[in-house]
Amino acid sequence: MSTALRAIEVFGIIAFASSGFIEARRKKMDLIGVFTVAFITAFGGGTLRDILLDRRPLFWVQHQEYTLLIFVLALVVLPLSHYLQSSTAERAIIFADALGLGLFSAVGASVAQEMQMPLFICVMMGVITAIFGGVLRDVICNEIPLVFRRGQLYATCAFVGCWVYLILNLLDVHQTLALLSSILVTFVMRLLAVRFDLKLPA
Image (tube, rainbow, N blue to C red):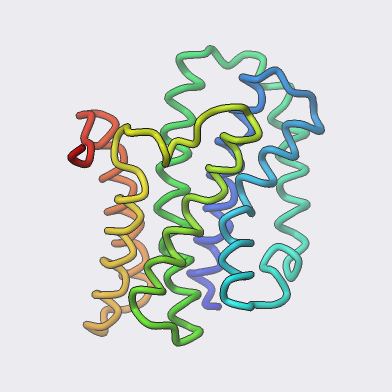
């Protein structure tokens, strides 16, 4: 995995873990609960991707520093979260989740491509990496998973972003630029969907 891809993976872990921290605190969980929700949110999608691709060891097992990062962040964030107002928390979750969606969809598609999977499978791996952690987060927090509600575009944003990465890659665009373009498209598309209430047709 390239340095750029590794950096994007770390930022994605932080972004999704942050959404897990905020949601767990909204549910008034203690340190163990906050850490567990953040851990599952950050690693759930990538774990399922690695299992489906028969990729061993799992990415967070191979890099134990990822798990330590979540634990340290939980210790730091928990005392500060008491000062987070509900309206601010809601906006923070949307922003962190959109950023994580963009980061992890690009990483997931890239990992599958490195394993020489067909293009559509690469896209599906990107979408799974991006959305499954959030699904587990919402289930644990007793919410209907965001991706299953008939709400603003969510998985669709990751789907489009993955294709942006793969098409640019096929055009021999530098990998870092292709990754950043994919992340930006997914992130902006998700925020626009929330801002203007964009939905798929019923």
